[in-house]
Length: 225
Image (cartoon, rainbow, N blue to C red; front, side, top):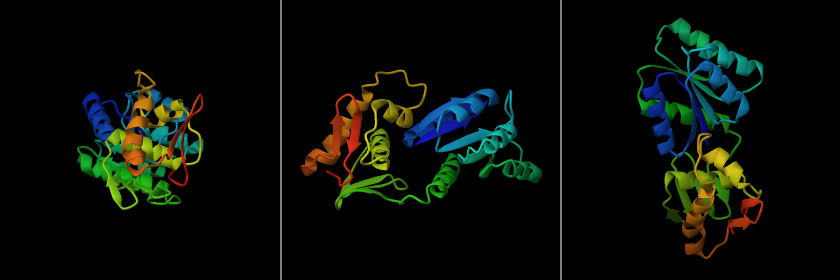
């Protein structure tokens, strides 16, 4: 899942980036309101973490603009302000939640997860493909009753494939949804992680769920292989 952080305090923004990436999110960071609005318009995000006091365009204006354009991505607003009317304005412009600085990262992450659960309430809480099960909330994966230990990045790649099970997804789509837009490494990194997943999810169980379609991409079999 992909997160947009719009925050002009460099240390805080980088701290949020590292924290979200450690949880397996792909993260884009914008340091001003103008760039933040551009990112939000040009890319699809699971959630936006948005500071209110920003250079260029305020968080209030960004939120109001996105909602007017029928962009319903969940927005969690951050601010140093703690007045009740600031909270009212944030929510009235379309924000889904509000957190005052300084805050606990654990609380921020819990609120982001709550927003994601609300947004995906029409999806099963546990994703399934045959006997492969993945629980986004607990970051757990099983093949049958056997738990499978994955790194955060492996988990994110598998989650994306499971959300698109039965569909062919290109290497570019995996990069765009699992890595952030600043990634400048070798796109073949996707192949590396798909190989890791096969070695953990398929081969120990004599299965072949993750297919490679030359020139097209990858497909996770709906029946789990």
